[in-house]
Length: 237
Image 1: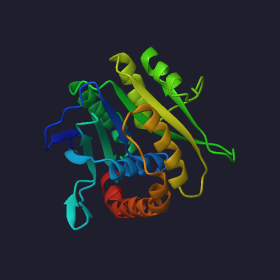
Image 2: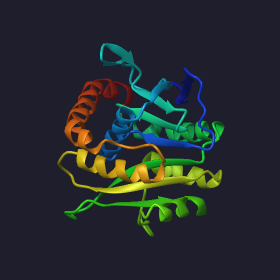
Image 3: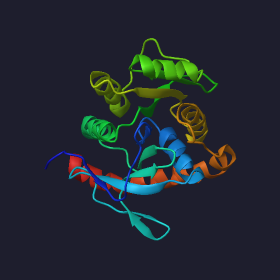
């Protein structure tokens, strides 16, 4: 089976000079919850889907409508695209997903890709710090008053976006948030959403609704992951 990631565009997309937000869930669900809140708060429409022979074959039913597990939501007026997914991609696909997202962003001439990842810590308070892969990305973090990471490790899709983006001179920022082994991710999702809104003009979150509804979103995402587990076990062993 091929591991190529296919992106199928369903509607006209114009995000030239704009932004791409990575909403794939990994290292917790906070980034997926944050981007789901953005999609629900601002007028986004589904404009594309991601697929691969190595994605679990399944349909996500939302309000009676079948959906691909991984989709692209776009607001052409704000020039923002969000890669949204109800499934965590298998580790073997992280590089391919990141490269597909990067190539798509370059094709559509976006100015910045924003991703996020969790940091496991014993600190009681929540915090968000950032890392940029170019001087421009670092300046945007400074202008947004987001502290930066000097030394550390960024795994998975966010790490690949940073590395490959640096080679292609594509601005990438990864927001890093603290998380614990147990407990809900919706509060971290709120922190990420607020940080993203500082970097992406117009991409706002209704924090009151997020805190009220994110637990439902989190349960839905986890339910999809549980339903997909037998399929993943059969596919990946």
